[in-house]
Image 1: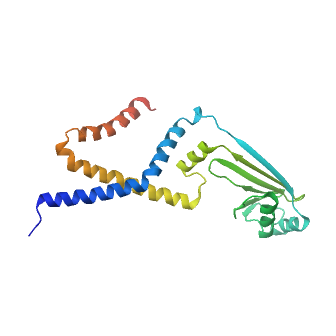
Image 2: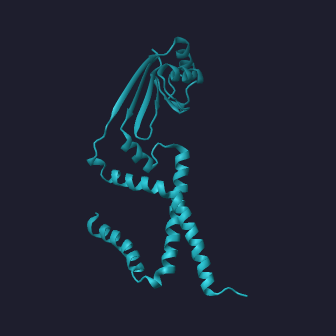
Image 3: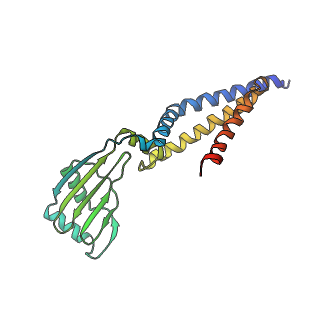
Length: 210
């Protein structure tokens, strides 16, 4: 016996509600975070940054300086990783975590940029003297969360999370739209409210955004 339109409608509504609450549960914390950082990003100029700077220095041993000189010709400017013994020594001497990043080699120095969410860092090694300089800047938790919002210097894992989170948000919104469609006949204000959500930002863009 074929199912009635009422039972079919109820089955679709049940499925939509299930997808809607599952997707909302997955992206709930992320949406709260992104809503909060949307406000902090919009008022970034009004929020004072609490910036701290750490500086460290060291002296590279002679045998490791020889590795730097032998690893690239003196007139070679290129990008390449540090020799593993040099990288290991720097991590221990400076008490830092040094990723296998591409260093910029020049005639006088080896420079490594170490950008990170909510701050910045860099390391410089003088190839002739072996003098090592390291500086780390921390701009505080608000800056850190803002950079998470933008996916700035966050690495591949966080970018994948943002893609999954965005997909969950799309499922949440689309199932919400279909649920609205099912209930619109009993709720006359449904589509005017949806239209308002579309028209209001368009009017703001047309009238006030240059």
